[in-house]
Structures are given as C-alpha cells and as structure tokens.
Image (tube, rainbow, N blue to C red; front, side, top):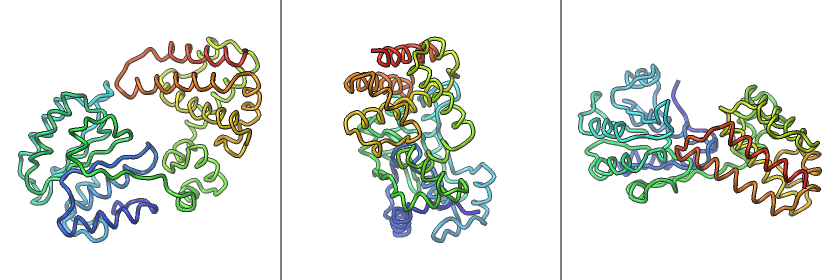
Length: 327
C-alpha cells in the first residue's frame, strides 16, 4: 500500500511533488509543527516517493524499492532517532550518517536521511552534521522532523528549507478522526481536547491514554476535596511523567482561560468544568500562571534530555497544586 499524506496536507504535498518533479526540491527539508499535527505521515510519504522507482502522485507501492521499504528495510534510507536509553541523538549516530552520505546509492536513485526529532541532536552531533548538509552530494535528501525547531542550532536551520505545518481546520480533521474512531461526536470531543491536533487526538482517545486521563481526573478531584498530594502522587505511573505534565499544562491553560474570561466555551476539556469552577474559586489566576510555568519548565527539561526523578517531580508539582487549592 502506497504511503500517502493526510487529507489536510494535500496542498503542501502538491507543492512538494511539483518541486521534486521539476528538480527544485532542496537537499534538506525541515518539517516542523506540534506533536500530533501529522509530520510523520508527510515525511513517510516523501521518503517513499523519493525512493520509489515509478512514482506517480505518491509512491507506486509495488516496485522493488517500495516493497523493501514496506518490509522495514531499504539500503538507501537511514533513519536517526534517539537511542532507547537516551533522549539525545549523539555524535556517533551522525558520524554514521556522514559515512552513509559518502556512499553511492545501492538502488541507483536517491539516498534519504531522516532525523527525528531533529532537536534531539546535541551540540556535537549538530556540528558534525553541518558538513554533510553543506556538501550532500548528488541525489541526497535530508528530512529533519521537529516538534520544536527553535531548539535546533541556527546553523542547522539555515541549511534547510523550513516547512512549518499549521493546525488543520476542524472541518478537515474531524471527518478523518471520526473515521478512525468510528464516532463523529467522539472525534469532535477529542480533537478539542488535543487543541486541534488530529494524530494527538487519536492517541488521547486510545484506551491507555483514557485510563491515565481518568486517573488524573480522580486525582484532581481528590486535591480539590483536600486530598493529600504525596499519597495521590504515589497512585500515578511515574514513567508517564511527560504525559502527566502535558495533561496538567492543558488543564491549567483551561483554568486560566476560565478565570480570565468566565466563559466555559473557552475551555478544551468541557467534561472537567465542575472541577475547574471549584478550583477557580480557590486560587487567583496569577497563581495558576506560576504553576503553569513550573510544569512547562519541567517538561522542557525532560525534552532537553534531563533525567529528573519522576516521582519527586510529580510530588513537588502536586504539592504546589494542593497549596493553591487550599489557599
């Protein structure tokens, strides 16, 4: 089956195909946008079409090259991601990229290097990549995929053509998500919870994510009712720290919207309105801003490769929540 871009990416895709077919596609692309917007399907479709021996609007899905890609291995594709034990892409991985770029394509076409998330490259790895970006050789395509491109070195960004993907309109994303979830109302609800990011909405609607969200809702309710934060923190899976912080940030943003506007239509998590209203009574908006800053900073440190003690971070954060709710 040929890899295709998502429905709301058709115009971007048409432009990429036009550039590729006219020989004007740059040798290095930076695809950016929030996690869950659909960068990966677009990158996969471009990788497949670039390596395909008989591409049409998309890769043919039937040639030898497409079959190798579908089987999970293609000798002219190198994908670089952080190692399992690290949140960073280190210099050794980029040295392998540089060696790969120096080789001749085994299938007689392009060599493609995909790096994701590109901001995971540490400084040494980024600097090591510069030479290959400057002198990539013939028929070489770099695709850098990034959630937060501002964290890339300016020297990396300047050597790529930047394609920033915007949040799709709801009328384009909801039908796709409704088909995936099998329910239009569910699609509408989860798309709003996800801030309009369709792939994130699909992930949040999954059983595991729903379970975590329900645990957090019960925890939030317990704190509003005077629960003890350290004990509540022990109920959470500390390994889910990044997702717990994501939910907390989204809910704090809702609280701030409600506190500033008083308009319940402004919140994304409409099912949490009763809890929000009680929380808004108990604390000032500026206090929610402080807690939001703390959560964002902890999440930033995680994304930057920090290795905090998850349980201690959760406990410290919930103690702050509890103090506000009791003030």
